[in-house]
Image 1 (spheres, rainbow, N blue to C red):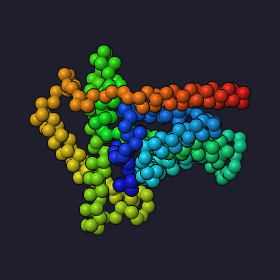
Image 2 (cartoon, helix red, strand yellow):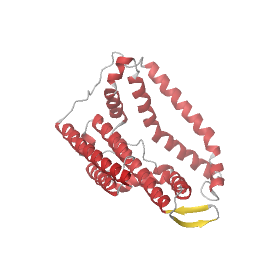
Image 3 (cartoon, one colour):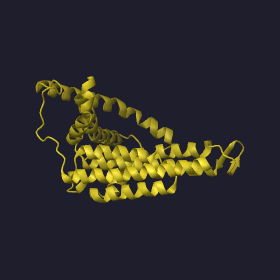
Length: 274
């Protein structure tokens, strides 16, 4: 399961999405996430599905590679579906045993939340799989540059996010190595109940934290040795510049935003009539 985590990893490919400006991808991802949690009706989900399928197609990242990242959140999906399934109150009861009951609204809500979580992971994965950490840093810093007028440390914030994204695959690899080393010594991480497997992961935390702190210290010393003093006066080797494809992407995103607003209004009107 550890190797199935794809968040924070970069998948090299020659696609239209890879060549886009990171600012476009950041804006598109934000707009997509807002749309995912805005819709209620089937028409909205169809629009989101069509948009997501088109982005996956254009990214040229294998769909199976993206789906691997969903295996790491199946527990979260199961817990979310469980709470929505059994704790949603409604007169339309499908099944009941003592105080436990399942309603039609609970089933619908559980399915919707599961779909939203899946789309959430897939949508953010497209951005991280098609954008290097350096590009994400530059795009985020450029997008938040107006906040420097009110003395927000934009460069430092972007740098911290880039380091965090870069450390995700490194820590995943380190965790896999520690697990393999302990399994060679007789540790069992795959059998038993869920609670037993959770307890078996506790011995991983100490060496993992030690490794993470050691890497953080090495990184800090390397930055200090190179006289890093923040973003003041720093220049870019590859400054970001919009191309024609980026303007075309903004037009597509604007059309998607219009569709989101229209369908959202239709959902609100239907909800008021109910």
